[in-house]
Length: 177
Image 1: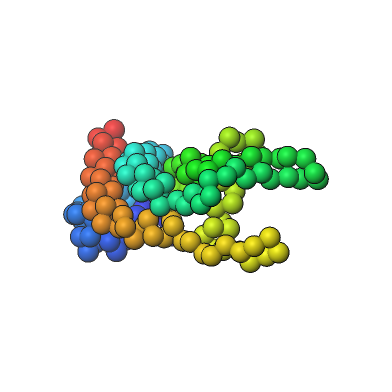
Image 2: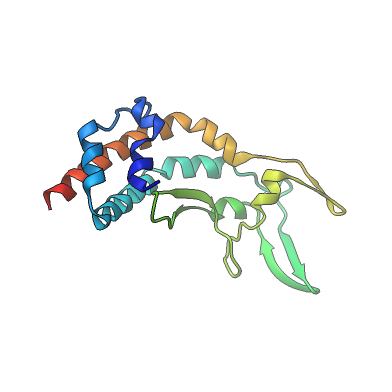
């Protein structure tokens, strides 16, 4: 299924949950666009989603847990200090990432992960799922899901409406070329 079919068959848009639905003629016109024009629309949609995801990112940072006792954690490998994790490190690592998909515009919100980053959030998975081991256990804390539930109306109303408006404007602009 192509982007055009998936984008235009979004049940939320057709039921009007995203503020307003795409008109039937806009849907037909989008399918007529060549591949390059569809790519331009996808890029613009990804940019709009990332631009309006700021309040969600702030809420995610707010819901992200911090080390309770406020101590610095040290990670060692083969007896040498590999990384030092300050309280609030995971909060600082939260970021917006644009998806690489050529078929569907996507953004992701989560921790930046990688060797050498000042705020490496590789351990977010362990907080979300929980652990149980010889060094202690961590109870599951699904803070991303909680953030999604708190921001659902914003996602559906504000971002959804902006996606529909941008799609219509972009398609009309591409058709005029």
